[in-house]
Image 1: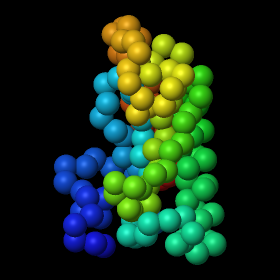
Image 2: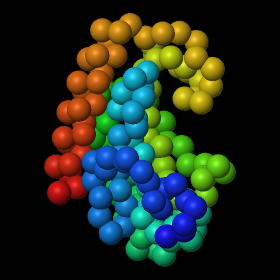
Image 3: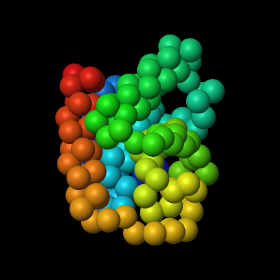
Image 4: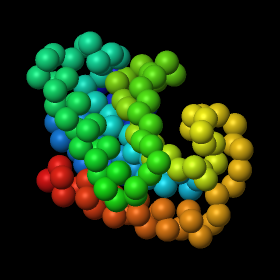
Length: 140
């Protein structure tokens, strides 16, 4: 744990899953329901900082997370992103993408091109809640 790292000592974070290796949180973004983040518990910067066994645990968890998003939300695509430039603590963003989302086909971090129909976002929020329940089941 590093004292000034916001991912080592998060405030107000609600973990969907937490164990000794990683935690999964659902990002609160009303434009992108179903956006999840997997955060490695130990303060490491790079995937290569993990031993072979931990790498397998991480990849398996990311794959299960992606499958849960696909099964519950049926997105056009699931984007995976791992930067760590601003916060050098190993974490991954998994974001379901839809042709009518605010930035499609550009990245989540790109300027917004449109507003998604609020009824569609409400349905996706319900799907994201089902996804959260599925994630809890898969990692129980």
